[in-house]
Structure formats: structure tokens, C-alpha cells
Length: 82
Image 1 (tube, one colour):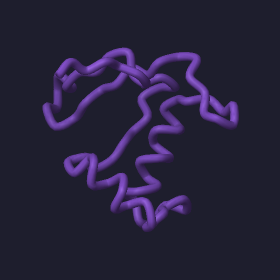
Image 2: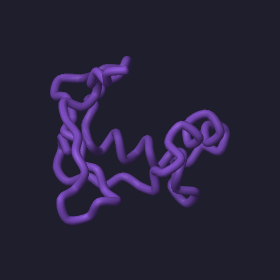
Image 3: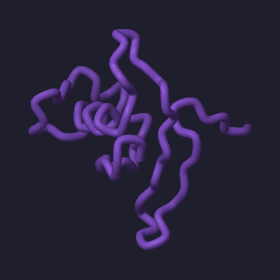
Image 4: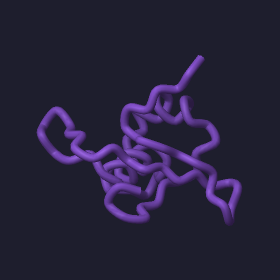
């Protein structure tokens, strides 16, 4: 199938580290409560299911979410939209 981007406008493997991906996030996206979708939101949500010492860690969502991204280790903000 063909991937159609929704939350990211583009993505690519990092030129210096082939185990990392860089995503350019779509501007203007908002959550249902009106808050902005940005790199902080991505990191917060990844930590919610992968980082057990994160305050927002939710073990009840690990099985549903983490299993869909088995090779994801962490997320890091480069700037607000990367």
C-alpha cells in the first residue's frame, strides 16, 4: 500500500545514524481539547508507553500501543516541529 502522511509531512532515516528517523510534523494540527500537536506532544506520548519512570507512564496502554511500534526505543525533540 501507499503511505499517506497525516501527522507528519515527511520522514527520513538520519544521515549520521541509520537507527534514527527524523519526522517533520504537520503544522496546525490540534488535539480534541484544542492543544497543539508538536514535538513535545509526541515525546510525552511516546514516554507514556515506553518510559516506566515517566510521570505519565500508563501501563494499561502499553499492550495496545507499544506493540504497534516494537522497534521504537525513545523519542527526542529537535525543535517544535521535528
